[in-house]
Length: 242
Length: 242
DNA sequence: CGAGCTTTTGATCCGAGTCAATCTTCGTGG
DNA sequence: CCACGAAGATTGACTCGGATCAAAAGCTCG
Image 1 (cartoon, rainbow over the protein chains, first blue to last red):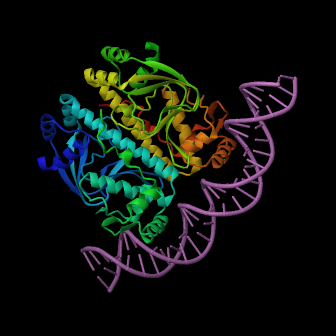
Image 2 (image 1 turned 90 degrees about the vertical axis):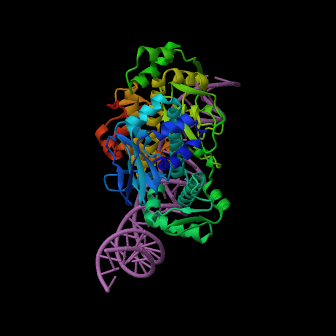
Image 3 (image 1 turned 180 degrees about the vertical axis):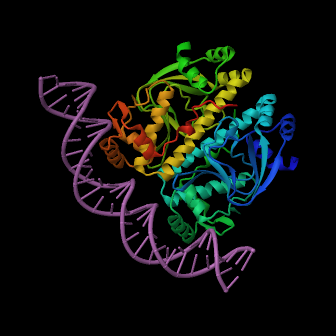
């Protein structure tokens, strides 16, 4: 159990150094670990969850689906992320959450989280902070889809993934595991699957990236970041100097 | 001063009934009220604000700007909203905030807000909750821009504004003050200004809405909501049954 | 080997962007 | 009271990024 929390503690510690008391409080959270196959719903739109989850292994995505079945991916979650922390306070969830790959997920009851937050307000602040970073990423995605063309959008997504996986200790900054299909990338960037394929060909042939089924490699970080106008500030990886 | 807080208290009370102690705590916040003309920056991208603001009158927008000057509006704020609550925990702001119309804004120092949150954790929860609703709106905007066409996007924006102004006591649900230019609407929906104009003509000629410089009137709510696939759940106006 | 994904390609079409000019409004100063 | 300028709304012509449709080609795994 304590092992499961390591990634999450590291995630929180990126915001601020944790005190021993806080670490003990986190360790007291009752976790239930579950393994899911790829493309499995974790939370369905319209439900009222009574627990939040923590991604331990794999990739997950929150999304919204239209009546005619088209899907928009709203955010990607990697190990150490708590993609549905917002369900702690919002009643009905307005977006679904599903695995993209085989994943290991730890669940913690809302009641237990609330207890910890009540006893350790500073942990509440950290969790709040976490949800604010999520919101910041949502804002960037609005701008990404709203004002960049397809190539820049995809480049931006790759930059974000590389920076986040590096911060999470999952990559060296130039290559990381990223086993998403082109259809899923299309759903995340708001382009059609066919155009996603052509955009990938462009990014590959111009030597920016290569993306095999399993691994993303950025060959030309500067070029990719320039193409995307990527500025990692919105990820708020530097602890704020309060 | 106490008067300035009324709208904000009502905004919070939509989440949960406030106790007398909480209301007193809010009233203790030192507010500085400022009036701004239209198109005036409140917070600039890259700054590190030491205070948060509360919109008392008028309309504001948070936005991101590209190097070549194109702007994406990320959210609209109306009276009673705290559009930059996130600056309380995030250091550098990743998005700017500016008035769209003449506005009255109340500022409160982060330090004072932190004090209140420390003494009244339940107010911290309410503010957290507020930022979660903001994030929910961001998510819907991603989906709005990512998977709807121009007509549906604009229709969706109008539906959102009408529901929110109604909830804030600023409209009866069919007409409200909404003095945005077509350029600003274009920036909020990710379409060009010219296409925005043509989209407005469509929505006007099909009898869905009319939008004079000052006022938005929705003539056919059902038609507009259908066109937009509008579902107000993401605004989380119903208090959650915890 | 064959079924079912995923990727790729080619052809065609359309929503929306861009450019450039005109028209309206409206506030301001002569 | 009107001329003038600036901002916003509107129009028309043209272009283009990206969607759609349909089919083919690779992969992967039972």
